[in-house]
Structures are given as C-alpha cells and as structure tokens.
Image (tube, rainbow, N blue to C red; front, side, top):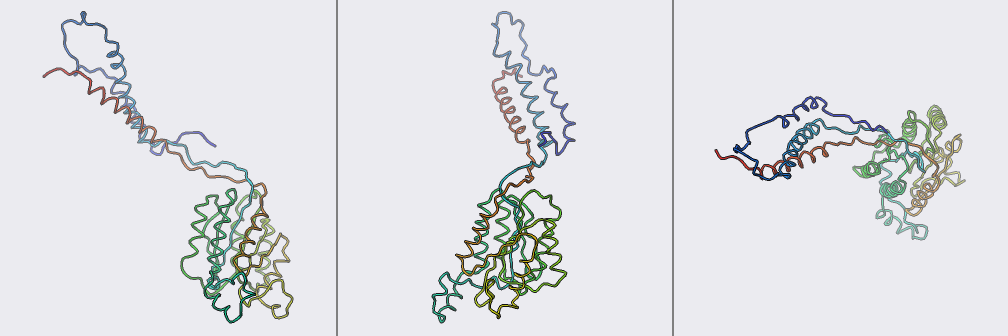
Amino acid sequence: MSSSIAFEHPWALALLPLALLPLLRRRRDTLAFPSLAWLPPDRVGQIIGWLWPVFAVLALASSILALAQPGRPQTQVQRTGKGAEILVLLDRSRSMDDRMLPANWREIDPANLLYHLAKGPQKAQVARELLSQFVSRRPDDRFSLMYFSNRPLGVVPFTQHDAVMQAGIAAGAIGRGLADTEVGRGLIAAIAQFDQRAYSGSRIMLLVSDGGAHLDAETMQRIRFGLARNRIALYWIYLRSYNSAKLDSTEPRWENAPEMALHRFFRTLQTPYRVYQAEDPGELSRAVADVERQQNLPLDFLEQIPRQDYSRVFLAVAAFSCAMLLLYRSMLLRSLP
C-alpha cells in the first residue's frame, strides 16, 4: 500500500511563501520609552514575543495546505480470508411472487390448501430475507448480484461491502416480475462476470429460481464451457411450486418438464453441481445454510482502500493557531493615539 501524499489542488501550494509574511519586522505596535534599564527582565514576554510569529506562520501555512487538500490516494490491499466468490443469480419472474407452501402442507386438507397458498409468504420475499442473512454471515466473501426474467440485469458487481449487497437484495422487492424466465440468458450473463477476474479461490454461482428451461445446443455448450473455463461451481436452489415437477421423481408425467430438462443438463456439467429442492420456507432455510457450510476455503482478494483526506488536520492546526493569536492580541498593550 502506497504511503505517498497527493494533493487534489496542487496549485494552492504556490501560495505557501505568503506564510512567511508574519516574520517581517513591524514597528506599528512598538511603545516608545526613554529607558528600559530600570525594568526587570520579562522572560514570559520574550517567549510570547517569539511564539506569536510561529503561530501566525502555522495559521497561514496550514490554511494553504488545507486548501490544497492533501491526502493518501486510493489504493488496493491484498487480503486473504476464508470464503468464496459468490454470484447470486436470482429469478425475478412473475412466478416468484407466488406463495410458498406451508411447512406442514402435506397434512393440510386439500380444501384448505388454497387458503394457505393465498396467505403464505412470497417465494421471492423469503429468498431475499434468507440471502440477506447469508450475506451478513459471510464477511470475507466477495458477492455479486444479478436478477433475471426475460433478460439478465446486473445489480451489484463483485464487492465485499455488505451494505451495497444488502441494498441490491432489498431492491428486488420493488415492482412485480415479468412473465418470462430466460434461465439460459441469465446463466451466460452471470458466467461473463467472472471472465475478466483473476482466479483467487473458490467460485460459486448460486441460482435461485422456481423454473427451468429447454435449452438449445448452442446455449448448453456456452454454459458448459463457460463454467469449466472459469472453474465455477453451480448451486441451484429450486423453489418448487405446488403441482410443479419434482427433480427426484421418476414419474413419467415430469419427464418433459422444463425443470427436469434443466436438471438433467446440469448433471452433465464438468464442474461441480448441487441442487436443493425447497417447497417451504424451512427447506429453503436449510438449503441456504448447507450452501454456507460448503464453501469456506482460502480466498485471496484485493480490497479497495478509499482516499484519505488530511485537510481536516491542517484546518484544526490553523484554527488552534488563530485562537492563540487572538489570545495574544487580547493581552497586548497598545500605545494611545
């Protein structure tokens, strides 16, 4: 990390010679006496007489330096922690505004299940709350956030600043989602976020979605090669809706479901893949907790250190010097007109 000092307005340093003006000899406040031999030595007066030019020079020099705004430039510091680079790819389609099943939905009478589905928490809301907790519990991770529906939307680039990521997650609550779910476009855009980054440790793409897709061959190839090229592990938290496909089912009726097609493709990836099927808030919470336990490997990253402004220090010195000069002037004996 650089320790050099830089000035925002270096032209102001040209005024520094003006700080020497108080050292010029003046006779305006001199008192005339025929003889001072009978007076005792005034040690305090002599010290004060030497100090006031010093305070005057400090007041002017500090004011000029504060005007130049000295400070330490923005730098990057190499850090090492435990965690991962995690890109959260969050589905923002209209189906994510649907309600999640209650935890005991299998025990509820079918006639009353519709009532619970209408009053339960929204899938997107539960996902945002759990992701917010997930981010706050992992201070060493580098997070990025992207939403997708009919097209991907980058919200937060990779950062370690928790407040920025939390604001991006909270922004997902604004408005309603769109009808389409283009998972393929979202995955390709998310992979591209890693392309220009140096590999420094474990990488995860956390896909949170309640839908799937039948991807064409070109899209599957781009996703497969992109994940392998950037060494990205894919974690899919599948928020299963009522009467939608079960990924662990062998029933023929789910064979051609988009979710099953996407799951089969993910299982052919050369990079690590893990799926979590969540039907209620409790299962979603356990899925997020399991992801949190999986990735705690050494991670090297660069931390941005913002510019440090030192002008306040010089303003404080100038203010103190001016206060001392006012005190000196209040004790100064002046000649009568």
